[in-house]
Image (cartoon, rainbow, N blue to C red; front, side, top):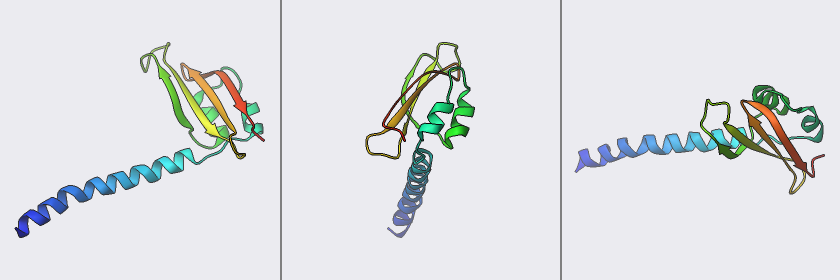
Length: 106
Protein backbone atom coordinates (compact mmCIF):
# COMPACT_ATOMS: atom_id res chain seq x y z
CA UNK A 1 0.00 0.00 0.00
CA UNK A 2 2.84 2.38 0.87
CA UNK A 3 4.51 1.65 -2.48
CA UNK A 4 1.27 2.26 -4.43
CA UNK A 5 0.76 5.72 -2.94
CA UNK A 6 4.29 6.78 -3.79
CA UNK A 7 4.12 5.28 -7.28
CA UNK A 8 0.89 7.16 -7.95
CA UNK A 9 2.40 10.39 -6.63
CA UNK A 10 5.50 9.94 -8.81
CA UNK A 11 3.32 9.38 -11.89
CA UNK A 12 0.91 12.28 -11.29
CA UNK A 13 3.28 14.97 -10.00
CA UNK A 14 5.15 15.52 -13.32
CA UNK A 15 1.80 15.97 -15.09
CA UNK A 16 0.82 18.85 -12.80
CA UNK A 17 4.25 20.42 -13.10
CA UNK A 18 4.07 20.32 -16.91
CA UNK A 19 0.53 21.67 -17.02
CA UNK A 20 1.46 24.49 -14.66
CA UNK A 21 4.49 25.45 -16.74
CA UNK A 22 2.53 25.34 -19.98
CA UNK A 23 -0.22 27.61 -18.67
CA UNK A 24 2.29 30.16 -17.36
CA UNK A 25 4.18 30.11 -20.63
CA UNK A 26 0.99 30.66 -22.67
CA UNK A 27 -0.07 33.54 -20.45
CA UNK A 28 3.33 35.18 -20.97
CA UNK A 29 3.24 34.72 -24.74
CA UNK A 30 -0.35 35.88 -25.13
CA UNK A 31 -0.28 38.74 -22.63
CA UNK A 32 1.42 41.17 -25.06
CA UNK A 33 -0.87 43.86 -26.46
CA UNK A 34 -0.42 45.66 -29.78
CA UNK A 35 -0.56 49.44 -30.21
CA UNK A 36 -1.75 51.38 -33.26
CA UNK A 37 1.84 52.56 -33.86
CA UNK A 38 3.12 48.97 -33.90
CA UNK A 39 0.27 47.96 -36.19
CA UNK A 40 1.22 50.66 -38.72
CA UNK A 41 4.82 49.36 -38.79
CA UNK A 42 3.61 45.98 -40.08
CA UNK A 43 3.74 46.17 -43.87
CA UNK A 44 2.89 43.61 -46.53
CA UNK A 45 5.82 41.22 -47.02
CA UNK A 46 7.30 41.81 -43.52
CA UNK A 47 8.69 38.53 -42.11
CA UNK A 48 6.86 36.96 -39.17
CA UNK A 49 9.96 37.16 -36.96
CA UNK A 50 10.22 40.93 -37.53
CA UNK A 51 6.51 41.41 -36.83
CA UNK A 52 6.86 39.57 -33.53
CA UNK A 53 9.91 41.69 -32.69
CA UNK A 54 8.03 44.94 -33.44
CA UNK A 55 5.04 43.94 -31.32
CA UNK A 56 7.18 42.42 -28.59
CA UNK A 57 5.61 38.99 -28.48
CA UNK A 58 3.66 36.34 -30.32
CA UNK A 59 -0.11 36.63 -30.59
CA UNK A 60 -2.72 33.91 -30.34
CA UNK A 61 -3.03 31.64 -33.36
CA UNK A 62 -6.49 32.20 -34.83
CA UNK A 63 -6.29 30.16 -38.04
CA UNK A 64 -4.05 27.83 -40.03
CA UNK A 65 -4.45 26.39 -43.49
CA UNK A 66 -2.28 24.33 -45.79
CA UNK A 67 0.65 22.15 -44.86
CA UNK A 68 3.40 23.62 -42.67
CA UNK A 69 6.62 24.18 -44.57
CA UNK A 70 4.93 24.58 -47.96
CA UNK A 71 4.49 27.89 -49.84
CA UNK A 72 0.70 27.65 -49.49
CA UNK A 73 0.76 27.41 -45.67
CA UNK A 74 -1.04 30.33 -44.02
CA UNK A 75 -1.32 31.25 -40.36
CA UNK A 76 -3.30 34.02 -38.69
CA UNK A 77 -2.47 35.62 -35.36
CA UNK A 78 -4.57 37.88 -33.14
CA UNK A 79 -3.11 40.41 -30.73
CA UNK A 80 -5.33 42.16 -28.21
CA UNK A 81 -5.24 45.95 -27.95
CA UNK A 82 -5.22 48.01 -24.78
CA UNK A 83 -8.87 49.14 -25.03
CA UNK A 84 -11.81 46.82 -24.50
CA UNK A 85 -12.75 44.88 -27.66
CA UNK A 86 -9.69 46.14 -29.54
CA UNK A 87 -7.44 43.79 -31.47
CA UNK A 88 -5.36 43.25 -34.60
CA UNK A 89 -5.47 40.23 -36.88
CA UNK A 90 -2.41 39.60 -39.06
CA UNK A 91 -2.20 36.80 -41.64
CA UNK A 92 1.07 35.33 -42.87
CA UNK A 93 1.85 33.19 -45.87
CA UNK A 94 5.32 31.81 -46.38
CA UNK A 95 6.17 33.57 -43.06
CA UNK A 96 5.39 37.03 -44.51
CA UNK A 97 2.53 39.46 -43.82
CA UNK A 98 -0.19 39.13 -46.47
CA UNK A 99 -3.18 40.82 -44.80
CA UNK A 100 -3.87 42.80 -41.66
CA UNK A 101 -6.87 44.39 -39.99
CA UNK A 102 -7.48 46.08 -36.68
CA UNK A 103 -10.31 47.40 -34.63
CA UNK A 104 -10.11 49.99 -31.84
CA UNK A 105 -6.31 50.12 -31.44
CA UNK A 106 -4.81 53.23 -29.85
